Length: 376
Image (cartoon, rainbow, N blue to C red):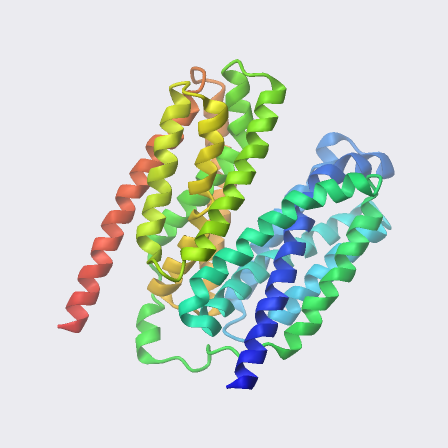
C-alpha cells in the first residue's frame, strides 16, 4: 500500500508540474509572435501560423492516442513537450520553430487526455477534485508565463529553454508512475466504454462557449461602446474568476456529482451572460461568468469518464470533442458578432448555454433510467 501511495504521489506531483508548464507554454505563444516576426522577418499572418500549428498538433496528439490503443504513452507525451519547447527555444529556422509548436501541441493534447484519465483511475473518489486542481494550475501557469516573459526582456529563446528544462522533471517522474488499469478491462467497463454522443456534444458546447468568451468577449464589449482598457481589464478579470471556479471545484469535486455541477455551470454562466447582454454592468457580469464557465471542462471530463470509461482512449475522445468545440465555436460566432446589435452576442451565448443545460438534464435523466434498468 505504501508503494502504491508513493507512486500515486509521484503521479500527482508530475501531473501538477506538467500542467503548470503546459499552461505556460500555451500562453507564451501570443507574446512570442512579435519576436518571431522580427527574428524571421515574417508577416503577421505567417507568424500566427505558430498558434495554428500548436492547435493542429493538439488534435493530432489526441487522434494518435486514440488510434494507439490502451498502452501507456505518458512518457512519450511528456517527451514531445520537451522536444517541442526545445525546438522553439533554439529557433534554428522558421520551419523548425513551426515543427516545435506542432510537436508541443501534440504533447499537450495527448497529455491532457492521459493525465486526466490517470488521475481518475489512480485516485478514484479523489480523482474528480484532482482533475479540477491540475486544470486550475494549468490556468495559473498560463496567467504567470506572460509576466515572466516580460520580466526576461521578451526573450522567447530563454523562456522556451527554461520551459523545456522544467519539463524534464515530470518526464523523469513518469518512469515511476503507477501502472494503468486499462489492460484489466471488465465486461462492465466495456459496456461503459460505448461512446455517448450527447455527452460529447454537451462537452464540446462547453468549450465552444469558453473559447468564444475568451476570444470574442473583449470584441463584444468594444462593440458595445466600452474602451480598449475596459475590455482588456474585463478579460483579465474573467481569467481570475475562471481560475477561481476551477480551484473551488477542486475543493468540492469529490463531494458533489459531476453532472449536476456541469448543468449548474451552464446555468450560472447563462444567467450572468443575460445580464451582460442587457448592459447590466457587463464589465463585471461577463468576467463573473468565468467562474461558472471555468468548471465546464473538468466536470465534462469527469462525467464523460464515468459514462464512457476511464482509460486513455476514452480520455482522447473527450479531449477531441473539447478541441472541436474550442475551434468551431469562435469560427461560427465570430461571423455573427459584427452583424448583431451591441452586446447581443452575449444573449446568443446565454441562450445556447441555457439550451445545453436543458440537454444536460435530459442526458442525466437518461443515464439514471439506464442505471435503474440495469439494476432491475
